Length: 311
Image (cartoon, rainbow, N blue to C red; front, side, top):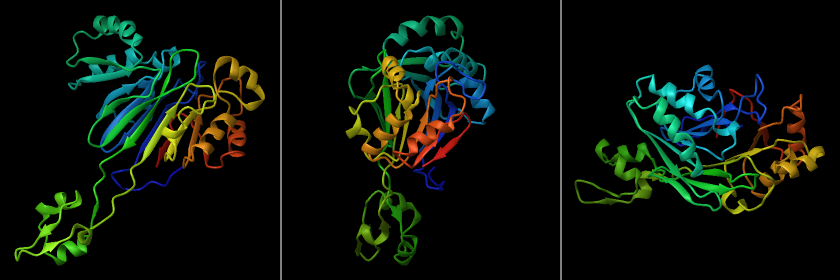
């Protein structure tokens, strides 16, 4: 797990649910919250996601977007309860759900019936699950879909940070009497002109910006190298690992991955760290998944409900 820093560019991933279709007491259905640059994004919303938010103390105050990978119940049955609860907490800001187009016709009637008096609106933004496309883009982050190989149309998501400012060299800034009002534009690349008309180059007053971070989410999917180029070099990859390699026949039949599959993809994608989850309830000892994956990709970690990764 990456070391925690105080940089604004850190990514914090909160695991709300790490189980597969058959949820367990300590492994709820898939849901995560990614926090970055004063924003929050929920990835999948399995049954019980709202309970886990409260249990683990994950605030939803800056959470305005949910990204649903596919329309299997263990990835979206928590939506109605979560949105309903938001309506009872006095929320005013509108909410956007990004998902397969069919989610709109499935959930719109439910929201209209149960949430019609809420002081905010729920917007549906459909994406095309069969191709990679940018579905969210602002000055600080871009989110791209990653078409996956599953029994139903399914997409992963790539979160890419952008627009990081340079670091101000405060010692040099003070030496040239740079006023605080100029700090922001200097960190964005501007030179500084002194009262005497001397131009101080930006590189004298700053140090390079941090390298933008990338997080990739890939669940549910059979092994596929289709997204290698997009995911390549990511700071962190979450990849499903429903089965162990010994059950490869079942994983191929159900279009899921083994821990070894996830590790092989991580190795080929040259990611910095791998998180595996979505473990089948047939296995009582999840350490078997970690052991299998680490034989191929050493920097692997197990997802578990309530665990937080910072990278």
